[in-house]
Amino acid sequence: MELSNEVNQFEKQEIEHVLKSTVPAPLDAETTDYPNQIGGHGASGNKWKILQSQTRHVVYKALQRFPKGVHEVELYERVFDPNCDDEVLLELRNFIPHYQGLFYEPKTNVHYFGMSDLLSHLAHPSICDIKIGRVSYSPNSSPNKVHSEKTKYVWQKDLGFFITAMRIFDGKVINLDRNYGRALSPTSVYDSGIRLFLGPNPERARRLAGLFCARLKQLTDWFEKQRHFAFFASSLLLAYANPDVSSLSGLSTVDSWTESSSTATTSADSGIDSDIHIGRSPGTSDCSSNSHTENESIVAYLIDFTRWCELSNDRDDNVLYGLYKLVDLFERATTDEISPRWSISPDRILVRG
Image 1 (cartoon, rainbow, N blue to C red):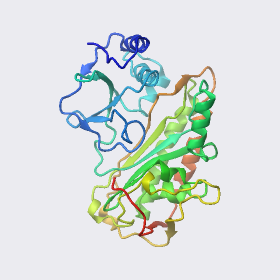
Image 2 (cartoon, rainbow, N blue to C red):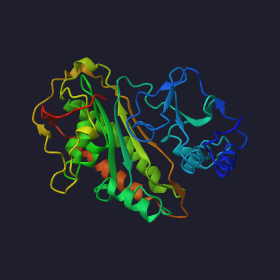
Image 3 (spheres, rainbow, N blue to C red):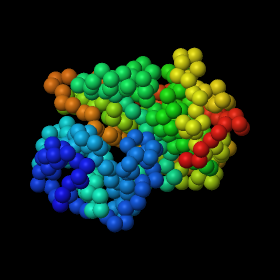
């Protein structure tokens, strides 16, 4: 099998090094676009979208331009090496998608790697993609790259994270992209980010918050003891199921909020665009309490590993800072008895997601 002509000779050598004894398999002919991709690579019209195999419950991510894609595969191969006996790496398997190997598309020779579909068991999932860490550039980044990353979200160093996308099911699909996330300030990120993600039913939101909090504490425990890796621009994928979507009615019926409708500002005084009003009102939502079972299922995994580097004997305090902040916010949500209220000016130009 030959690699794509778009790949230069040096990259070919690096990919072949990563392949080692592994022979990439052709993609399943039944693969389709992955419907639950809301942020990151492939989400905004990128050349190579994330694909899925519904029969195998596997998603396929195209290797990004060298060295990112090769570097990401290197991490997965290291963690999921069948001969691995490092307890720290073995424990990391509990917090990242399970690696399914390398694949290629026969017609284009584009390389993909496979991962377990973390959302395959969730009906109508509400999803939140959070870039974790105070900085998202690696230590060897150029000054231009550092400047570019710093300007993407002015509050990232203060918060330690950046909500890059959300999808909320509330009778209709509500898609919120990174432009919405950029407008979230430290004073608004709880009400208009974390609490909004947890849905309109206060009782259920508290229950979900407790589950996310416990899971994030487990991940935090791993980061506090590991000295292997520092992660930059990695994300947390959070999700939960909405099995009875027709009964949900706590938010508006808007379909999406995207860049084409954005006039958001990231100034310290405005956390949210003035045309978007997200507040908190007392009382419960219109959701009936029996719409959701006590047996909740959530997803909370670390994803996206194109910018990791080796550590010597230090902690990854960059990621830990953001995890501590998120744990605090989800702990706050475990006792919140207020429902979020969302209304959008009728003259907004909205794009269906």
